[in-house]
Length: 169
Image (cartoon, rainbow, N blue to C red; front, side, top):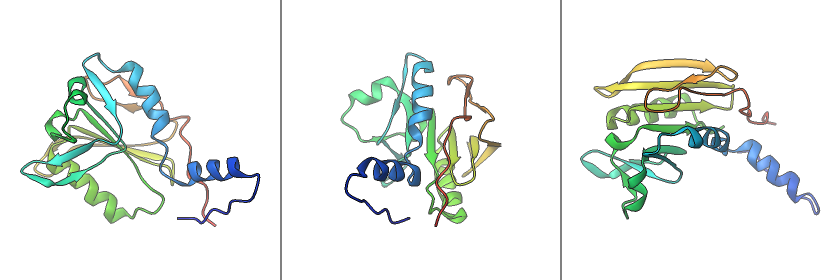
């Protein structure tokens, strides 16, 4: 991660640089998704998904869509079969192997749809139809191209306004 220097009177600049250089990109997609969700679904942040048959193995996507009743429970781990959609924003430091491992984890768990957004190069990948530890449906796109979402989600997400990470250096 890039070191950020804070100078007196420049706190706003530092906050903007933190936002540009970290994975805090989920807000734009979240704001777009929430008003279009069916009434029985909700989008949650800071919610984790457990691996079936292993409560010690879990992932925490940047955003997850679950039945609205899930938020009323005291449970902090969602059943992956209840997950309609998970969103992962790739961090600037993630390696291809880490991304593949994470994607395989979601497929093995049985998460129905996973969207990986990569602000490093302005691309996205939608994974659907998990079977035998791999996603059978894989669709790649670039920022500016809409992400076609599976039912019961809204028809698509607009990616034209998604920001890129600031160049390193």
